[in-house]
Image 1 (cartoon, rainbow, N blue to C red):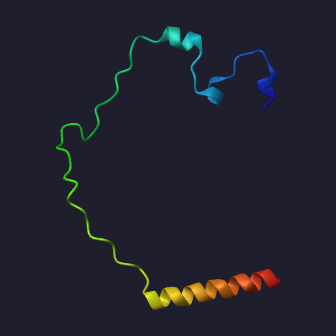
Image 2 (cartoon, rainbow, N blue to C red; image 1 turned 60 degrees about the vertical axis):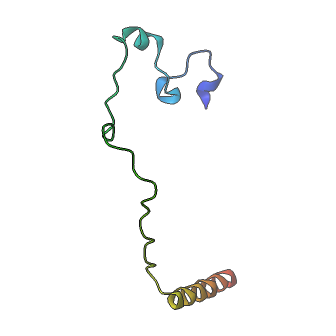
Length: 78
């Protein structure tokens, strides 16, 4: 970074920190919007969803691993 060697302040787009003129121009505190879940009850942690079904069968997975290993050794030979 070339600007790291300069005596000038780094630009805001690099540091994320606003300049002092921007801070002075601020009209006070910034009000943050309320979260969408602010008025909802806390979820019950005992309610765990079922585990998703695998998208491939174990036999298909073994075949795929064999194919990947074969392709890997073929690629190393090239």
